[in-house]
Length: 114
Length: 114
Image 1 (cartoon, rainbow over the protein chains, first blue to last red):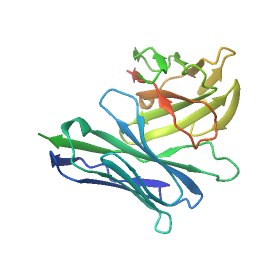
Image 2: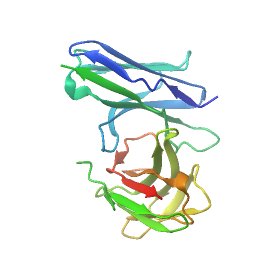
Image 3: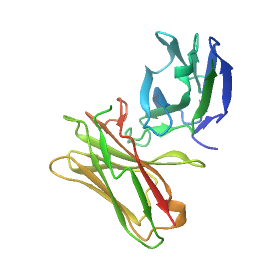
Image 4: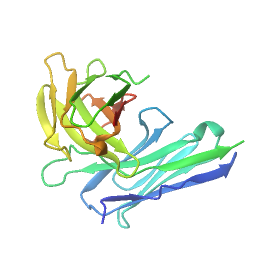
């Protein structure tokens, strides 16, 4: 079983839709949870950052972490064509004495159609 | 613009050859990370340096090596190249190296091995 599982999609939605992106993980040592956005031919950029369980909201984006279920989500409200990108979940934690490695999901390709 | 500079942007070479990828981190960042991104494996952590010293190692092959210089720029050396080494290689930097902070990614070096 991979440490982080993410449905690669692709996901295609109309403009204005609510988008739900998800990841599951198996390593209970993960404590830091992130969502990165990667536009085509660009490097990933940090979108949301959450420590431990709970919700975090930033504008149209909401990140949720459920450590009991080992499940994280990213919601995008009122999606825009500019949100079209690959979304990667990432997580890290103190595992075996090393908390330096950020483990990424494979990414979900999202297209928002005007 | 993340502030992380990677060169070259594109590289085409033959099997058995050796290449060097270069990374300049953001001003003030002490930690440099190297990642490999391929369609089937996603973003895979290779190695991390902090202030000139190796901090963590991931799935880095023995044919690959890296170093961080006193001016904090880093180089990733790939030798005895194989077709399967074709991928996007990303460098990222952060202020500290705890793995729980924001990583700033460069735009990547696309390596094609023929």
